[in-house]
Image (cartoon, rainbow, N blue to C red; front, side):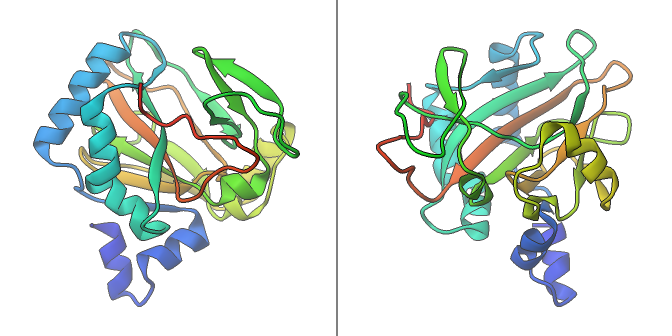
Length: 236
């Protein structure tokens, strides 16, 4: 798995680097047939929107639970890791945007239940989302599956190295905190996976040119939520 293997040869294991930096690239993980199937999903689901939450596709649920992405998540967490959210992003000339420095803050659940430390609540595409305590997010892993080449002009994600260890960062302080840290530009080839600790500070610019930038972002967790809250998951 590309970059992670190179780290092993240098005496630093991939998982150690991941925990240290909060980000790790796995090269050439996805097979051509899987890329083709995921691109078809992007064409079907996104349709010139910024992104779409993917729920109810049986092949996708099986692939993310048992295929190569699941093995990456398991290697970085534990055998209990499972996908709890999948969002397809498709930057293109018809739908292009920039993303300011931020932390991902909310998780999707099946229904609203009042649990201490969880909140505020919101609805996204009719699905209840809640901001959990930061220690919940810190245990999660986010994978980005790249379906197009990501060079410097095609809106690569930028991460603030080690920022997953800062705890909760106020939205108004995110850019300043990121500027004070080493920043990594996450270039990728078709079929690569970038893995992140979910609370890492990240952002991206608008894409330039007329290419697409299709990315499937998947959150994994290897634990249950407290107080009767349940992960929404990918099932219909």
